[in-house]
Image 1: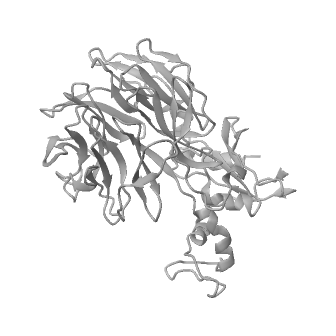
Image 2: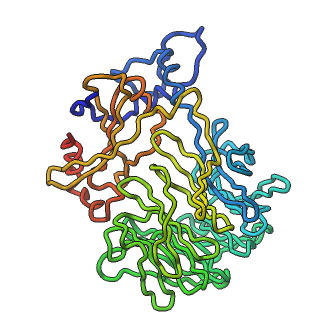
Image 3: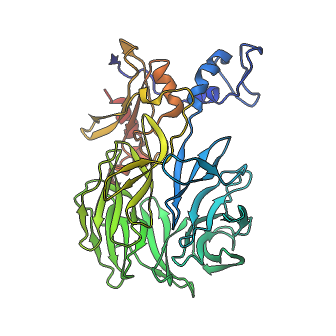
Length: 492
């Protein structure tokens, strides 16, 4: 089978509207009219037989890891059994998913209290108003209690190591600034302003081992993010990172070392890519651990004993797992994982099991763990795919081509099954954002184009995409935006 030169450069708004059309009975009309609030020009109303044909491709379930239990080898996940994903408890790999929440709005960011595991916090908004609220769920009576004010926008959040306090950000004071609040979740009335933080887009990263300091971050722009230290008693803020005069710097993520002398983070300081770094809190000196990895470190997790860092690199769109010994700052051998995308990594308190969410072109997001001593990989959830066999789906193929200025670009192509012969039509799907990246993810409903219509799909990462360094990300700024469209039209 050959893929022809691209015939189509489209976004699938119209087909998405068709796919989302409600189910129907065979006795009703054969044509399903568009809803009255749709503005349609030149697009025929879909037949109900077409909707029925597409429907299996819109019924995949997904699962995402939220938190490990601090004492047991159990975990919280989110998955959907009806209309909205809910928080579930899974007690062993492949075990039943016990639903804990039953809201009409999406609950997310569930986190076990880190000592007994009797409580977990989560957030959700109300009626889609995007003003997320903080809640605590008691596993002893399965009751949820509101922790925030029920009105403002609240985000982030981190339990103290002792498990008595929870720090999060809220716009409660003036509706604009993301201030830091601290609450004792077992006493919701204890909720109080801890520090006034100027501006929005703040986040909580970690508590120091003695719970005396909270590590916060402030998002300034896409190319600048700072780290702050907050005294958990007085609320005093100290800027940890500064611009070194060579340009803006991004710091992403942060964990205190167990000796309280430093912070691990990722940063593009003195680099085109995000590197794993250690910052000495006294001297502010940066020590880099991942310089030999020529890609962004997009996430990392520090083991509970502080001895090992698990880091995920974005290797030309694919995720690769790396391990670092914190005593020597040297990379250690890591288990080989399947090719795909790794997300939501969390260590169990046994310091052996690393939990994560994984997906690729043939498997929707599901929850796994790998034992870093034995290399044993275990699948905790196996989300339903209806009557569709996803193992037959097209795999994503990484490809490269040269742009009009000889710059090397990359992307992913999905080809139809072999039963479709000859030259095939092509959809070129340029990611939105524009600061984003197409990766070899599970395509969901778009597999209908491949499997049923024989249409190939190309996902190019034109200039301006993330994942290829900050210089590449800036190549389509302002008057250079048209260069990104040239990249797509130059694909062969």
